[in-house]
Image (cartoon, rainbow, N blue to C red):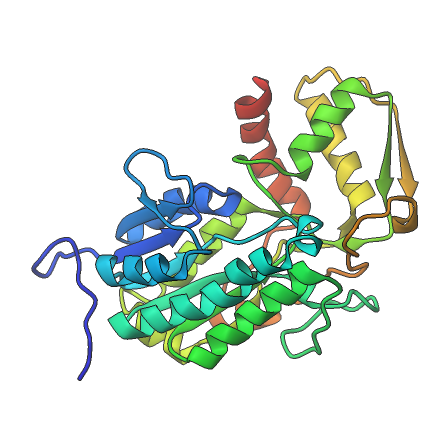
Length: 322
């Protein structure tokens, strides 16, 4: 017996229903915008705004109940436990949200005939070498956060069904706390910054991630479960190019100055990771090879510099009034 997802409208013009989890996060906030042309977006978050549903990924029973109530055609999960250092102190919380909830979501999606899009991370790798990581490379997370995200990927795969897992890296956005906002705030107050220069990756804007996710789903032409079943699996998705946190900082500061911000900072000193110890180890190599996604969906990433140029003016206006 097949199960057909319900929609909020009847007849040939009915719009598919999209359940968006983590709608208050960096990526979720952008997905609200990018997914609207594809159907009725039912936004949900742990601390919802007016009109949103409540969704706490640590409450597995209510999470499954929400899926069965909404009966979406596709679930887009942008919610996660992202406190990398805190996860070392709260492994149970990280595992409940990042490792266990994704499998529950996939099982619930299967029960209502829906597909699942889930975001993961470069932290599933150990950061060795200099080559961009491929989806087929051996994983080896360095801490609880990466281990919990990897376990979530495995839970989705074990549940079967239609799904895409999109691994990304170094995410920043217009909404929410992130590296870009922190650097600008520090640059206004300090004359010198000391920034790690031996970790390599591609800064990836939440705006870009949301737009690509929407374009992937648009290719399904409403048959989300059918198309994502055919192309199910793990894909890497980040902006193109490579830099370090030090190089990213220099780019942020230079662009903020050109936009008219008065920044106190002068010297930006490169330092090794060993000079900035953290509870959780960070991978030195976060480069991701995105060829599989390019071939499957014919979508191509802008450089991280281009994506920063697109996002930073909006961020500066919203956050700093520039």
